[in-house]
Structures are given as C-alpha cells and as structure tokens.
Length: 302
Image 1 (cartoon, rainbow, N blue to C red):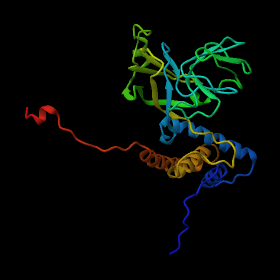
Image 2: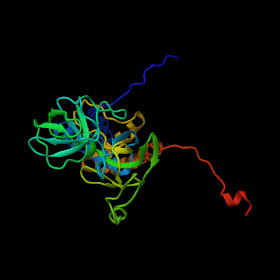
Image 3: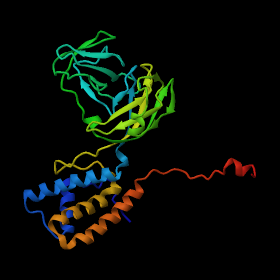
C-alpha cells in the first residue's frame, strides 16, 4: 500500500479561519470577517498563555552577573551597536550624549551567548540612551555607535520564569523563587554574596530581582522562561505551535467566532474546544519517571 511519505502538513492563519468559519456553518465573505477572526485568534493565544499551554516556547536564557547589581531583565535587553569588537562582559557602557549607563551582561563572543553579531545584552539602563550616540566601555575603553533604540521585546515576551540556577565555577547551584512579600521583607537587600533567591517582578517588561547582591562579575544566572507565542498577523503565515496542537487551535477559534456569529452552535463548539484543550494540555505536560522512595525511618523498621 502506497503512503505519502510526507510529514509536513501545516495550516496558515487563513486556513484556520476558514476551518473555524465552516465549523460555525458560515463562510468568510468580507475583509472584516478575516480581521475579526484574526483578533479572536490572538485573544485565544493570550488565553493559552494564561493557562500555561505553550511548553514549546520555554527557552533557557543566560546573563552574567554584575557586582552589586540586583535587578536584571527577565530576558535579554538588547542593544545594537556598529561593532561589538572590544567590549567585555560586566563593563559599564556610558552614552556620550545622554549620559545614560548600563552594564553588559552578554556579548556575541561569550561562551554562553547566542547573540547575533554587533548585539549586546545589558542591564536595565539608568537614564535613556539616544540612538546614534557614542557608547564607551568603562573597562575596555572601547567605543561604538548605538545603531537603534534599545530593544525590550525579548525581555517583554517573558510570561513567567519557571526555574533558575546560578552557575559558579562551572557548577550549577539552585536558587529559590520567593514571593513579593518575602522579598520586600529582606532587611538588607544590599548585602553581597552568592545569589540564593530571586523574585520575578512581573511588570510590562518583567524584572528579576536577586538577593544577595552579586559579589563578582563572573557568575551566570541561567533561567528557563515561558515566553509569548508569535502573534497571528499575516494571513499566509503559519503559527509557531507543534502539529499536535492543530485540532485544539481550530476548535478554539471556532468557539471564539461562534460567540459572535453562531450562538446556536456555541455550546457544542465549546464542548469540543474543552475536550481538545484537555487533550493538548495533557500532552503538553513535563514527563518524568515516578519513583517511590520509602522514608528512612520505615527502612529502619521504626
């Protein structure tokens, strides 16, 4: 029996919209129909983020600590320069016009970096850099021109930080996440040492607040962060989700459209969506071996 031999079935935004309208017993007739459906699709993707249904967008990010600095973007705050040659990690950059400052947390040549050439990641700046001004490194003395305004999009795409470690002398050491209340009650936030705790301040651009304040410029904070899915924009674009989530997305979009256009099918489409969502959520979970370890006092017979 002949088979296709292909495994590249994929739907673009227009395909999902058409499928969803058909499930509602409708046809896409106008440009507004497409616009309305695309808006519903992006709202549904935001709902998925709230439910934690996008494990495939988890990414590991590494930033190098700077002595005494306790706040870092929960992602990469990117600065594009004419040339990154000569700059070093942990030095302070100063803008010649603005006087703004920021500390370099990663450079393209770093062993833990996946940055593109002529891109630096930096701490949250003090002041506002001006595009086109000259930046000078306080340690290396290197100068280069800031090519564009700082790019906050990478850090702003962070939904949550799932886990974090501090790498010291090539050894990963766990650090604990604490609540806002626990962090604010730390009596001396400027005491220095190896980082043991962090608090994620979930602003529009989330910030990692760490404690104690780093006592060196060589430790590396590694953290797994859950990030936003790409928006559904151009109708011919595909979406960044695994094959197994196609049914859930089609069912969900049909339900969202039914709320506006097909109330007579709303309950049926909602049930289908919830079933598909449950299957997708179950498939999206982490898997690990389950081992039962008897308590020590049980082994001793006490």
